[in-house]
Length: 266
Ligand SMILES: [Zn+2]
Ligand SMILES: [Zn+2]
Image (tube, rainbow, N blue to C red):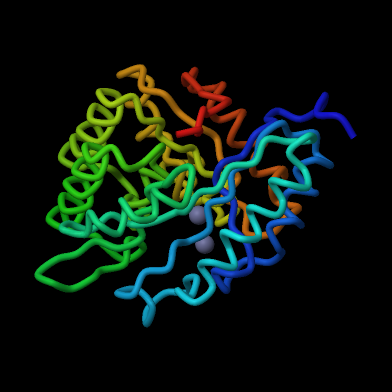
């Protein structure tokens, strides 16, 4: 099958069974990507992280080598058919530089996927935060992460708006600060198709996804920052589906500057 009818032919945000909430092996995803006519696939399963082990389904540390080994094997087997990169999706927390530096010795890239923020020594889920104070901590965390240079792109940067219906001026200002920081370091902001799969709501009769949030990406357009479209696939067939097509159409309608290929070789 060729990629003729496909609106994308790369994906850099891809999970697999070792995170314990996705289906399929790395090989299953690579074969599916070849079948869809993709020219590049990056695997970015959720990194093992001790502090999150009890509250989130993540890769066990004991499986990490298995993950790397699986990637080394598919690279050997399929590199003549598709370019394959080894990545990890991971949160950013202060004072953990060694973790990121160590992961970067093993993998081609890290994706920032901030599902928790830390406040007063405690973690709060990004799906639950509501107050301006919490949203500000998210913004500060993302900007600090951007400035470390560890991350190749920001997964669902707008996910912190999950509980927000109308966006106040203060909240839009936080969005804008994130966008300006990303633009300065030339780090793409992801348009995440998995948010589209999670459904939508309406504001004054207008359809809104929880993410990608239109108001956020209007500001991305205003600053001419770059975007990246990702499936965030947790099943092989979702590497390309209706949600990915909607994400592409969303980017076109908002006239966003989309990066289609990342160069990830270190
Ligand atoms: Zn996941
Ligand atoms: Zn993900």
